[in-house]
Image (tube, rainbow, N blue to C red):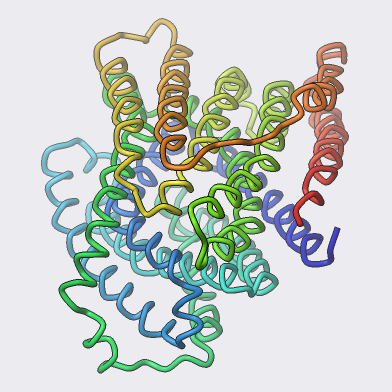
Length: 469
């Protein structure tokens, strides 16, 4: 394994530990209702990020290597900042309407909440695109360093804000934003190094043809990400409306633990493979793009499967270690969340085909099916006597999205991922040992079990990753 990959994995492990510590502290410092409000606030923010900013961000990432070669990185990020300002204005108008028609004024202070959204759109989005952009153009170590510093300062700031002000979801989130503000200057300065702002070139670039190209790339992505947002997060609003913020807190924490593990793993995989994949796409034929994606998927899919088995078998131990005692009964949500996340990350991997082929409209139907199943089911049926049905409905929705996405993407590029299923199954069997181990609520016992099986998971993953040429 090369030194660069060792550095990436080490950095990501540190970030995972920080993320997991954040969950523990969040559930210890906030009551279940405030935890529910935390997930509501992040869902509202995610709407603006996914619908208005994700598509331009994907276009930005897709062309970063070209702009690096032509020394246009400063010009590109400048245009993206201008768009972020427009989205911030849209968010203010939208939030005022939201507070008028809902009871969110009882949960959040209107002005403070709007300030949180504006800062998140302007600071968090630009910060995220800069540091991930640095990774795409080859500055992997700097990406890792910026990410770790942001996470550490963010966690410390969130805890500090809780103690200085009050134990509320917004003050926790303001702590995260403050860390991004501190790192943003240094990340920006590093990102634009060797690039100059050229207003004349920007004006010359903003042509009708270029805007149409961006629009037709971004519109299907925006529709898809809206449906994705609806499937991923609409359940939070429905639970809060039909049941309670407290019920949302218990479910969201259980699902959130599975999401954090898969999200961290997906980020690590994306960080390593995405630059390789994008380089393979440069000046490639359709056959070359198919080969590049299949090569990547044949390595990634077994790792995702091992992660699925890990979270399923370790769900109870994960909740004991990562959440406060009041949330320990949420472990069965974590178990179901493992399937949800497996289908989600697999769908995201398939989604890379549409981006490679620049045919992002092909992703709309799968997400529309999943979105419709989830929202209609949660609105029609009353699950107050068995809240476990809510994540089961989500899992069904994610499975349908993944299934139909495979069908759609296979029509764009021929999917051939030679995976040794027998070898994958054999590698997974040691996780079954957990079922014969004695049950114990002691945090150190469960932490030891997680450490042992976590190391085994890393060893198995390491045996697969070196296959990358």
